[in-house]
Length: 320
Image (cartoon, rainbow, N blue to C red):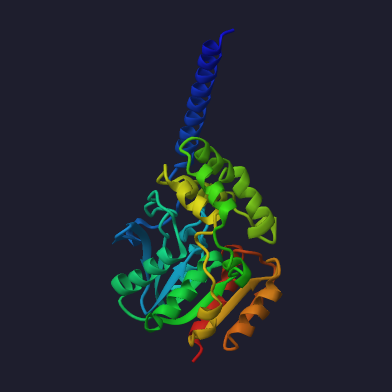
């Protein structure tokens, strides 16, 4: 067989493989878009931000409270849906979908911690329009801390639910993760990697091993919604995934955490790994911070035990 013939067959095989993968990626995206998010449409609003439209929910009356979900590709304001009604009795609750997540736009760009710091700052200034309390979850806590340090007049009390450790926040991009991001950014292979990482099976595994302490509490509808949110507004959902995996969304927070004068309340799930060390770490950096461990919960107590989580948040916000 001639070299030309071998090359032609290899080219044909590669083209067919790429075509099959593209079809699979498209079918996954279509299958995931079922519009399962059980949100009252009358509560949905849109903030036209310079990098893309931000979807958010507004409910209730009283002092503003901004809820910010974990920074994961499958996350959205759905993370808070079980406690919004309770919190809205005494607060004007804003729950947004971060850029690249949920129903917000997912532009094809590199997502950084500073991008979200600016989003949070602009949202409070232009949408809420006054000083606000903030409750944030997981990886999103880092840019809440940074934004508060940069613009303390916009923030009142801070509630941090299972925040990343200071060490995790300090992990910044290096040569190896930049190479990984290069592969993730490829149009066909990168999308396939993203779809595997955000498959229903992978999301279910996360809930079983990380998000919940008690698997019996997992609602199948929650898995479906998380899967839908990971694939909503494709094709650029993977851009956030690549940025997170490459540590572009991280930023050292030690100085910012030390300088904050606002009241800080940490809520950690009992089954969140190393939660005791995390509480000691944060309170050592900022002695004014206080924390509590919520029993029989893991990474998402606001979903797993929404009643207890809402009570802890309300009690802290009502303190003088």
